[in-house]
Length: 504
Picture 1 (cartoon, one colour):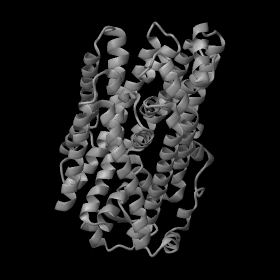
Picture 2 (cartoon, one colour; picture 1 turned 45 degrees about the vertical axis):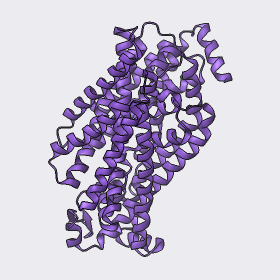
Picture 3 (cartoon, rainbow, N blue to C red; picture 1 turned 180 degrees about the vertical axis):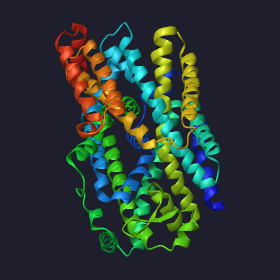
Picture 4 (cartoon, helix red, strand yellow; picture 1 turned 30 degrees about the horizontal axis):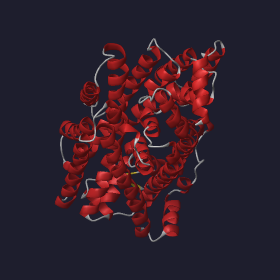
């Protein structure tokens, strides 16, 4: 890495820490720390939700999948775009209103307990346990991805890279809480957007224009331009099912809860979906045109950028690690300063997801365990510091899990995404649209969804069981919640509160 690239990268990291210190001065109570005091504007909320959602998958995973297999790998992007739009369209506004009406709830478990008048705290504790279980491994996957980027960029050992990336992310999340996370995500979202537009545009120009770029890919392998080539029905359903996960992701739902007003939802939706769709296109074209670009490069040029090259079975020169196509493009096509910004964008994608996961996990410990069970009269200042130390503790566990450089990032992300989508998605939808759902129905749905994902993902394989665990988990959770709720009736005051929220 050149000196200019290194300096640019370091300036970015210092900037993220500076935002953390600024947010620290504006954080006085737990609502500020975990929800920003419900004062996020539509732009910050939209880009923060997008950045915390997409993680390094958008800049490394998706371009790598397209580079390795062509447009048949784009189905996940289609499913995610549809799911994100439906989430903003039907969930965001209602959840913002309902969480305020339901005793000003500031976390997902808090909302579920208040929505269903669960004085036993069982619903809150089970929800918080599911969050901690899946987010600890989800966070760990981000730590692994960040470590590998630092390792490749700075020629550090894996362990050194892991701790440097972890310390920076932990620091600004520890200090500033939700405001720091949202503001840094806003900056990181802009960086990611710039990177995802700039890289494929410059790549197309290098290949002689759009038509020449597409022709070059087709001449190497025509199947790369076909979305249905070699893709079975189960594979398409599984890919599209990623979109179901949006309805249950706590780190995305809290962005809806933190909007300053329900009236901001249409503007936030426009910004968020526009950012996402253009970003997905950028990631797809980066991988697609990477095939033609790398195939024509001098192997010595690629070697000077630490790019390991292999020859495919079809005799095409390709990168040994397909997920490094974005990193390789950034270093070859751009000035070292711009390359530093683009590499910072990759780290942004990783950090913006880790910080959100840490914050939601810490709020689950502070609000849903510590306050609800052990210290009902805890002061706001005490809860903020419990949340801060929870960030450090959870991150430490995630770092220890990530200590193995061979950890499977993609498998962990897929698993956790399905876990949240199946456990919380059906319950969030029913709680906002159906007056008849009961506390026991919600509890049954969460348990069935989480257990199905674990059993299906860990113990079943082959045939129909190759279907992504999100599908059976979501459907069975929905059925369980409806069936159990149908056997009882919610109290009158819950129905009255539901009607009040609906009128708002």
